[in-house]
Length: 161
Image (cartoon, rainbow, N blue to C red; front, side, top):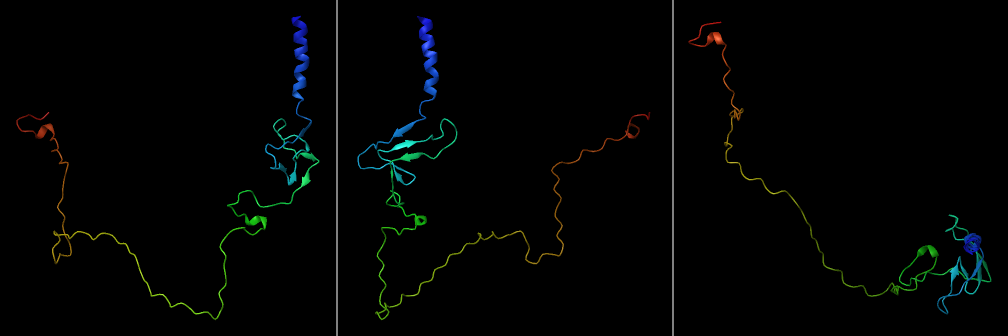
């Protein structure tokens, strides 16, 4: 009994791998909202083709019974796509005024500027008014040298050698 159940399971297992190769009937999720595939309304039509998930290749589907829909502006009403070649359906109404109209008085002149500079240096009090041509700076020795040790022969109170 177990062997026959296992044999039936193993025979039916490869058949599920071939599923999804046929055609599909497209049914819209909402009535009145078309399903558009490559400018063809595929609502209630048969669609055949693989979409690449199983074979890593995207194949263009074949649609049986769909009707062609002319290319139109995207559903985003608030956006304008100039590449479509259509004029936007919104915007301001511009009216060209006549040439002999009364001109408004000219506006008063207006000028404003900004600038930036470094802060002024503090005055240096230690520089004389008429400095000499050469100023000798004092030497500052942070590490005084140790006196060199004298050779033993020169030390007082010791015999040489």
